[in-house]
Image (tube, helix red, strand yellow):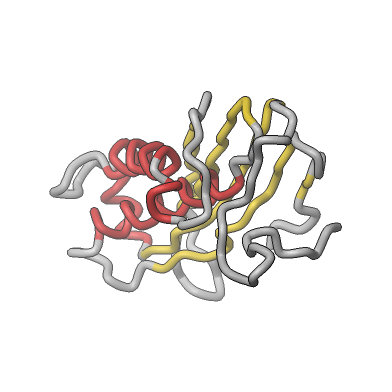
Length: 168
């Protein structure tokens, strides 16, 4: 693994990495995260009883938009012509014994054919999706929280394939 920081110029100042010499390859990144909430909140989401609308549909669109706008909010990210952004949810109805909270798992898959990877886009998609769920439900559950936002897979480019061994 290369431990050199690439976002600094010869003077030690921040710069955007020059990717012009990199090969154009298909690049894929998958990120995951979880939103914890009261079981009643999850029930209301599933039943469509949130005043702001269909929480998961809105959050899904927000996550896609977040991936597309990553370069606007992360200073050293390149603008990319993404070829795929998909947000998937897994509902965990059963409250966790240790917290009493139910949860929604978020998985974002992002693809591009280009000269730089889409890890930040996938992580941004998960983060924006989680934030949107919070925004839409905060009136009834301000104690919602997020965790395990992480890259789980990356492929393409010079550094090859990364698969997280432990998703905890």
